[in-house]
Length: 141
Image (cartoon, rainbow, N blue to C red):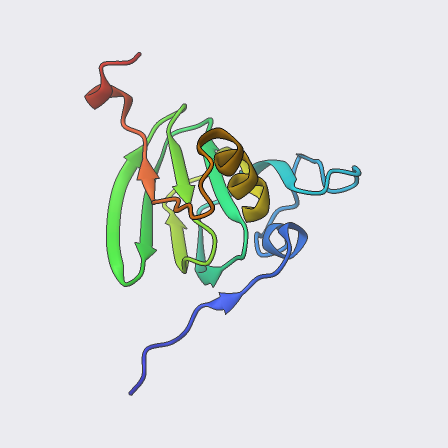
């Protein structure tokens, strides 16, 4: 049996519509072309695996226990206010929150990221890797 492939989500609006509650605030009605921002307050919830062509950042503003699955790799961790999760574009990811959670979601068009890196270091190849910010280990906060 072949493993299930993630659903492909093409736009930030499609992505936001996956959640049970609408965003409290969003940039979707603006003229912004390469970035989308949403303030979300969601109940305990499990979202199936999806893949987007844009990079995603989640800045958590409330604590929760969270489960992620990236490329078949499972990770469970407590999230606290201020934690940041980075999900590169074109990477399948599922998520489950064990309690209500608040976050700021940011979607970045990969061309914006490539342009910024290219402009900074004159390189045409860029990669964004999954990153969980643990401020305690960094000695911050």
